[in-house]
Image 1 (cartoon, rainbow, N blue to C red):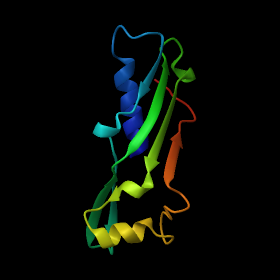
Image 2: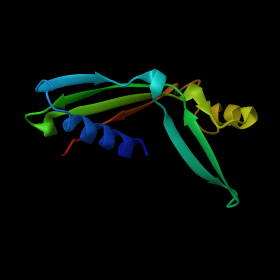
Image 3: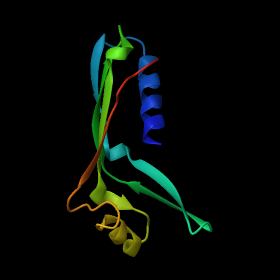
Length: 112
């Protein structure tokens, strides 16, 4: 889902007129998040999010293939609206936030 979101951001910014040829954009943590949904026991869908996402979009308007995106998700901010489940997801059984407090996404390529 993050990949599609980043693609949408790149496409949206590529269409804004009047931007410099090379520009850097910071992800606004106060207004961003990484959302997910997972099937649970084939009965219900659990939805949640990581509430803190930071990162940078470097966009080269002349050659979009020289652009890049990097996003960092703070795994300690996972929220499924169920404290016991969130604590379990933070444990070594899943994200092991004590060892891995972040998830980093780095683009391999950017295309128009």
